[in-house]
Picture 1 (tube, each protein chain N blue to C red):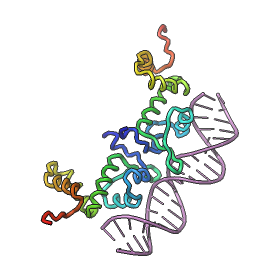
Picture 2: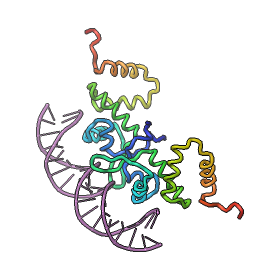
Picture 3: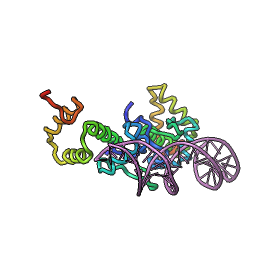
Picture 4: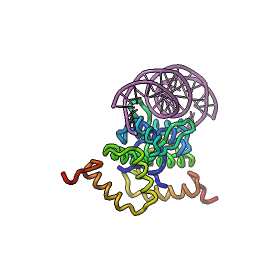
Length: 105
Length: 105
DNA sequence: CGTGTAAGGAATTCTGACACG
DNA sequence: CGTGTAAGGAATTCTGACACG
């Protein structure tokens, strides 16, 4: 694809760009949320798209979602082009910053 | 600026992307042709723009230009927005792949 | 479940220098 | 001038595991 998809960034730099710890970044890979490439030596390489995805993951985690839930959301996004509900849910989520907001409060 | 200007690529990856040796990349920095950033630890970081610039430098070097000449060209490009001659010269250069082409031949 | 950390090792990068030309 | 290379060291990253919760 474009430059945004070229896997050229090391984990240390990704950590700085996202604010996530290296431990967290590796864990999200273990949970199948991101898929970095590797150099011959085994060093992980990420793209700018990965960085964006990680920032999104970070937001969802803060909102209380679990890694497997976030993984499901990604799968949905790929198969279901028309995700009205999810989108709206996501917007509300971003606005209120909480997973289950008590609207009646 | 944009993502193309974010200094996030390590020298090893730049070497793969450009086909240049690490030695060459460091040398072009020494000659003031490129200006990577550094991590706290001293590791060099390059942008996609740097990668493009390096590929251009590689072409010019192949055409027989010397590093200081290439540096001058860059300076011109920055100060003189209307570089008709240089541009044309560059095009011819790219077309024929030689510094001094003998048109009479 | 998600993340911090110490452990030991391997891969990556750095600088200054010598070599060739 | 431009680039390869061996040298010694420092910074970066890797994996598997233990800890806490």
